[in-house]
Image 1 (cartoon, rainbow, N blue to C red):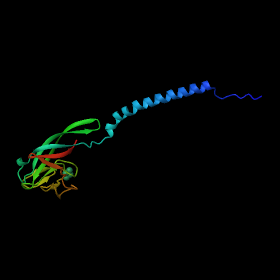
Image 2: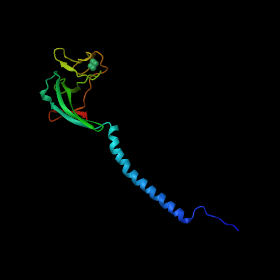
Image 3: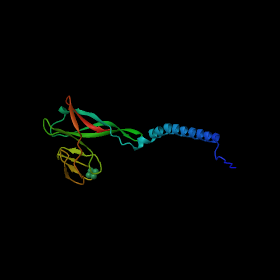
Length: 165
Ligand code: FES
């Protein structure tokens, strides 16, 4: 006579299956709730803002030809969870009746603020004496490249520049 003993009775298997199924469903529900919530809290820290915005920096007609004019405006900058408002200054430069450019006032060496010196026709950086010409080109000193130029557009006589938020 053979007495074969089953390792698992059908009752135990069914119970085991149900328990496993309930655990699996619970884990799936937990993941559905937890993963987006974690993403909500963690992702802003890893995001580099790519948002851009057109800012009105004034009427072109108010700027004299060959006389760079400083314009200061406030902009909101997002850094992770923190949004702060900072003042930025740019120079609107009219080369002639039609041509104009907008330059950043940040020195390309270590980001000090350059100032326009009309008596010398130069922008001078007070930190290490970096010197730029009217169009932002390098004349002398440590700055490795010209002053940054903004993308611009003219709308109803007003100059707009594209800035990162
Ligand atoms: S920061 Fe302008 S020259 Fe160094």
